[in-house]
Image 1: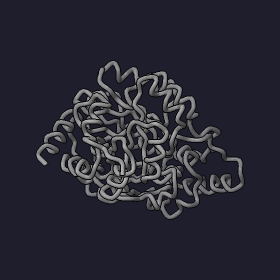
Image 2 (image 1 turned 180 degrees about the horizontal axis):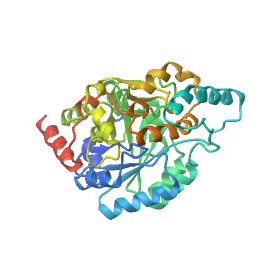
Image 3 (image 1 turned 180 degrees about the vertical axis):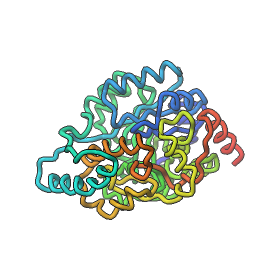
Length: 359
């Protein structure tokens, strides 16, 4: 077991923040410059979800954040290989996915699905943009980047944060030179970050996962998954974490970029029903059950992997959002969603700190 004296102090010192709270990086629009700046100005760490952003968009978003705050913030990417769709099995899955979503597309007034020729941004180009932008923290999901890339980011003044869903992944990040690791518990909303072993084996609850990872590595550990208030942060610290990364907790803030109807769902009884599914994106992710998931969740093993399926449903999700049809939008949320609060981001951070100190 590796010792980790006063992990909270180590986290605050390394990131130059006042509170052991990280607003999670949620790709696709929730993490606006306004949200990130408000969180960082309040003494926590705001995070930009740039996994689906073009390199120039990353640079523009970082510039927009820096116009609003001089405090540290994080930029996050998904670690992805160049997707290939030229083998027979993948082509077959693409065709099957097109058949499955065709009735929904017709209902939304969309034409027959046009298979994208490009499924995602090139990761190497995104990473180059993050190096150029040099945020205080660069974080990664879906995999571990090579040690030389970690060192290149550190040379630019970035602390490197890796996501782990099991102890082996946490050790891989430590060996690569990461400064911190985020323990993503099974309760967490959004995409699972598993890259060693199967995601089923790594659906480990936060209470079980945090002490395992804290015992396995000598770098500060952030706890993520189901944490919605200060009691949860204090509990995570008691288990060996240096702090908490919280995504769902910030979705209902007025600065969040999600659709107003999405926020309404989070504040409704429907938020209690979440499931881990591949149906929207091709990769396991936790979200609120809606009509789309009721129709496709049983077919999730028939669709192509991420990012191909994610690209295939992009137009559908955008059209549904424009029409305020939340039954066809990916409503990513964790199991703590029923505890959502519609507070301004700075007020939420202050409330979390008060609750944490109250025990």
